[in-house]
Length: 183
Length: 99
Image (cartoon, rainbow over all chains, first blue to last red):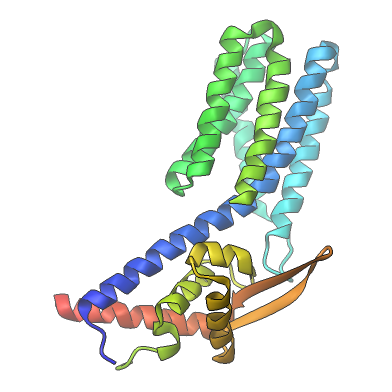
């Protein structure tokens, strides 16, 4: 049963395409719970910011809850029997904290809305990059939509911006997570 | 390897192996997701998975997710090795033709 050069090339192309599809769907499955958790956190945080602006202290608590949930979901995606501390999650949060601190030191936000818009744009930017590099169209769409909706709310719905972000940002992330899971 | 591994050489089984190989080791892939990735019918996919399982290349785990029955598949260590050898065999053919 000899295999010709063309057959070999076709088989390798099939393998490559199948592996790309499989890796993309696996990535969606891993990312999905993170989007849902952070969507809920944004919805709660921005709703609190809109109705109770003096409750800004709720945000650090929510971020800690989100990080713990992310660690937990990260540990769950480890192969069976290998659940362990995933240092890359800690390193990612540390790198993001350092980056955000540096940006705010150079360009300190003047209003709460600027701070409220910065984080969704940053997250949307990361989703867009992941979508581009992992060929994940759904991730790319989620990232671009998040940035676009945040900018729209910031420039055209300033008085209701926190509420807009609670519904569109938080709700959008939850729906995005469900959409990825369904892929 | 003068001859390709006949178990893997079949196109649907090749796709199944490729889809499972890219997953982290010991990670199980649900049957329904595998069906989407490979683009095979349920019966066809089930038959090919049974062949891979019979060859010791895949393991099948049937359990319940809540009350819903679930079938999940993963490559065994020998399945991973066999797939790597098969890919190397294909690359050799192309290299020889080009060299």
